[in-house]
Length: 257
Image 1: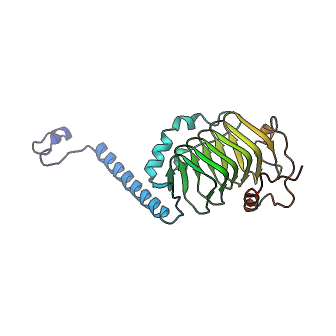
Image 2 (image 1 turned 45 degrees about the horizontal axis):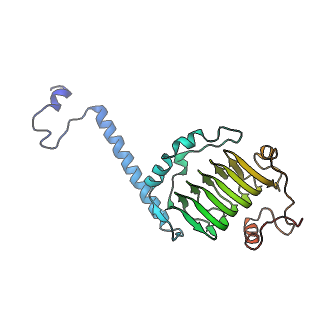
Image 3 (image 1 turned 135 degrees about the horizontal axis):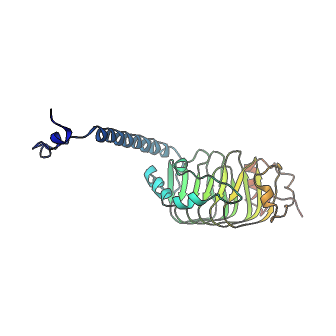
């Protein structure tokens, strides 16, 4: 029996559509086929999930490959984020999942519903009044800038551009963070249940209210941000729905001055 090189040179193989592969090439071919099959299964599962969730009329359903490519385009920004006083770990693969994709979005109010899909905004997201992310809502990723009068979040938010919330930013979760790679401005910051507010570049916070007394990074924020007035005593600081409802009709949730 001839060598592998001799077999590869046999006349007529290429014309017949046959190729002699080494053991290494065969192993790589099997690996590539397994990866393609896995990716196809993941895409099918994501599409099935997206068929069951509420749809935003101004967004479209995205493939996992699209979301991964969008995030990979900003991999350098992710790699250098979180190296200052406030740490952050940004794992691109952890962010890839069933998602709806939009370009620039401007709305009066935006509610991200519970059990919804992730929402990726390729441009800027501008919400004139309230942006509300319900408990168990999907991830929100804004590639551009995010501006909202009030932001009430019980989930994960990532902003690659700048954040401007001149009213109230209320965060309520034990395992999620609002992470901003660009500059950030917040009027009144109210984190409960150890919600992480993580501005990774320059930021200004006009006032901080820490109802639980254990908000992450509070000692850092306290160097520059004064303490806010107490919360309105009629409101439960851990009731995200009540806070969101209050900010629908008033401009803050603090006790009267």
